[in-house]
Image (tube, rainbow, N blue to C red):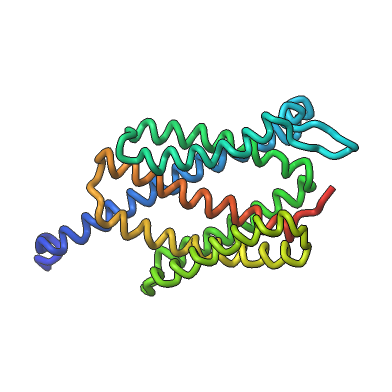
Length: 245
């Protein structure tokens, strides 16, 4: 009988334990993310397909749905929650972070309900499954690749800042060509960011301590990061694949 199977060196035990903690950490991250996406999807569909609920957010003016005051508040609230979770990371408990994430995903669902007023139901579901497939592939790449994606991620973050600025400018220009270019870049950027963020979270997971308050909070923030990657990738793809009503 080989003694290697019965006894491991401290280094081997540490490596094995670290790998298990990393997998548990990432499992928690993806569980939080999937739960948030489910909440967002259900509420978006609920508000988007119920005329009475959608009337709370929008007023019909000349046959066009235009957001009212409550609609604008719902559109801006998610940003406030992201900032609160980011800047309150040190002071908030892990339970508070989870509750904020749940509320945030629900508000995002209300905010995203407008897609059901603009695009056909079939194209929304088709785009969702394409997004899920793309996200899954890139998450796998980020988890398994040996290539350091740090520099790649820095370039993507600069690109993200660029398309945000370009989007604001195009709000005044109203250029369809510019909008098309922004959409293409958005798909490429968030596809790449998915791999980068998963690799970053894998590294974070390898250095955390199992079951601590800070580890749980890091898992929630990691879930928020991947959630935003998924949502933004979905919305940019929907510009190409969505059939407008």
